[in-house]
Image (cartoon, rainbow, N blue to C red; front, side, top):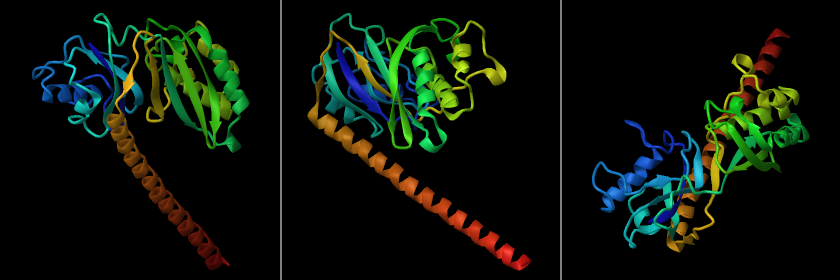
Length: 283
């Protein structure tokens, strides 16, 4: 039994868990294992399990998968068959009864919430988040109808125009982090009063316009999954490969942002010129 740390850009995928007829991160991992001969065609590796099932568009730094495989099946070996959007970067020998999903003592997500200070109140946002810390029934922050009682912790950190929302727990109900972010954003922006948190954590179901929809998935990152009994060794070459792959994608995003900004500025200038021209014609 070996466990692997896997990072991925979730944007090209319809979530982590395998689904029929759409690309998923798990499909990419299984395809790599089949190409290496770790498992047979149309099969998954023996005793396979994953730490979490991130939604479509959600990315990961420390997703963890574990399965039976030979010693030569290293992060470097997996990366030789994985796409550039999915990279293994560390591995560990695990006990025979190890289960990647059932054994974590802590999981952590970070959400990059775009919240410029000129139209966002950090103190209100932090008060909303702090009210959600500890043990609560989060039935209004998940579509699940069971397993909604959770204990969460974390905090908010200002980083320029972004507020980093860090949420940790032993496990998460579906969409809990993204709906929590929506609640924090609504309170911090003034779109909802702080009492909205009490309503969300109360016994009554919030439906329709009063309900809390999930925030967009792409700013969400699975950053940590802790297993006290397993010590991961970083594969230096695999980690270097992963850093290079994600730096390339980060550069492409920065270039896209610059191009988009230039288009926006050009359209705004054209609009301003048209308004000035219209004014001169009327004068």
